[in-house]
Image (cartoon, rainbow, N blue to C red; front, side, top):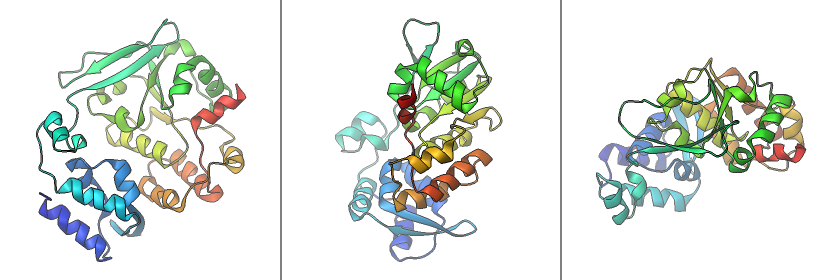
Length: 269
């Protein structure tokens, strides 16, 4: 059944009362509510220190959240799946696909709760969120070298395919932390910014973790046909203040009201 505290939070939102959204969001995520569903259901605006005005912007998504919260809690993913909500329980492990420039084919690395023993094959890692860009890693690196000022040779990089927020899995973070520099090629939108924020929240060094963007970012956003919805623009408040560079990205998105998919960079290769 729904936890009393979470039920109280949802009633506060429905009543239109200011709430501590970060606390509520953590509680929902901890229970297993998918972040995409949370973002779909609510519109969130900063109201004051630790206080936000939260409104339900998608009744269907809100109803789905209530339905998931009311399902019995399960201790393993299989049982949770039978109950209709496998996302309520985390997978007991994690995987990464990695690929160095001098390797003929990519590797699959498996992580569990045992002490971390694996290390990157190269001093630095480059997390690529888009599969097309990852599979064409040499071309992608050439773009980054030309437009993004990446400051190491391709021979010193292990490319990592990071599928959404799975890259911030607690079992993977020690592997990333062991790299000298962590470069992140994410979409220029709320989703990419949120992944980056989660990596830093997971303990990656802010000084050694870099959100890669083209030097002509503003021009690209001005030309972009990928329009940001008002809900997306409002969501940017959740990730404001993470770093100087990400704040620049947020300001540019808000100004031009557009976003960028990293795959668009391939049009110039």
